[in-house]
Length: 244
Length: 246
Image (cartoon, rainbow over all chains, first blue to last red; front, side, top):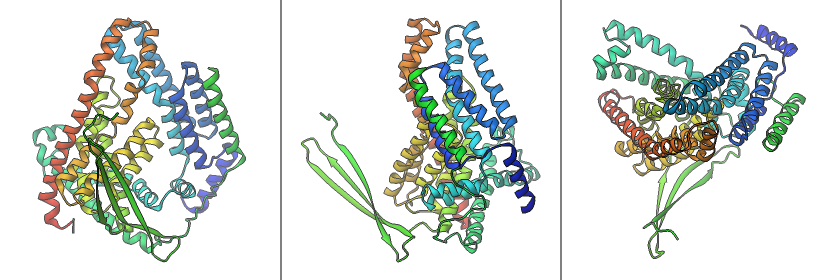
């Protein structure tokens, strides 16, 4: 996709959905974490999930919010069924497991929203704006960029292992653990250290050491929608804790 | 009254040094001050200054790349256990089992003050953003500070001390399980309210409380030790010879 198309894509998105500042999303995530911790009742959790899912829907993540809704329903279903039909240790095990999942579910959905609707450069700019040190931002950017490359490296390594007649599966690992482990770790770590050298040369050439504040193609600032969403969530969490 | 023999207080002071450019400051000296308070309130103070080279851009990028590998291997290790009601408590051990070599190689490549702390902060950000329980994120940072201090004792060169620091660092997923023990009263009331027998619940929870948490700690530390020894072997056999560490 070239720049023009990307720009058009963004404008297209503006028509149907609304955008939030990454800082707002970070704030909401903190708030949801607090809400889950303080949550007084089951009712409160369900309303919280409903609000989060409708926010996902409004921000244009249709399939994601549907999937999450189904997942939440499934967890509630497992909970109810295990309560009704199981007893003793099994009930305890399943009920505590579903409780565990239910507790982290709102945060997972919120995190998915943050990751799914924020571009990496926007996120970096937002982190820079809340004055997080460059010593954290640079490794974070490199880390996020490097994730897909690990998959690529892994595919090459798997091919090379097959060529040498070492199976990169669990069976191969059980047959010949030491060799398999070495064949995975050594090339991955070697490639990582080599890429670190190349990448640092490249990014110094592109001016990463510039001490001025970084700029971003996307406009990162608070809008009216940010304040509305923040108000609704704050109001619900602190009001709900007392009422529900 | 404190009944312990010694209580140890560790202060970490950083001196900030301006190098002329007002936007760009760097921390170049770390003073570790250890104060022990003995039985009769005798106070002893040891201080050690570690002269630091500052973290360069290359170091930051290396830490970023190794953190990505660390995170992926941690995910692979824990993927087997986390979404399973019976095995979920083995997850910290599984996560610790694969990441040792990466941790050790990262310290070997960047033997300065900072890599472990940055790794901890990055893990905290990732776990927080993907919606894990917030105590996990806090635990990441706390454990990273302790790990960093331990590794600093050996000046980042002593591999046994680095393994020790890894064993401490590997405890970070415990943060999310502590929830079950912290919130136990509410948990118990909830389960009893759902119709489980009170007596049964009590025995179940007390047994769980008595053996589960220590077992998880010990299991995780054991896995971390195995992983660390594997990493030591790999470093000796492969990386030192080939000059990657130079």
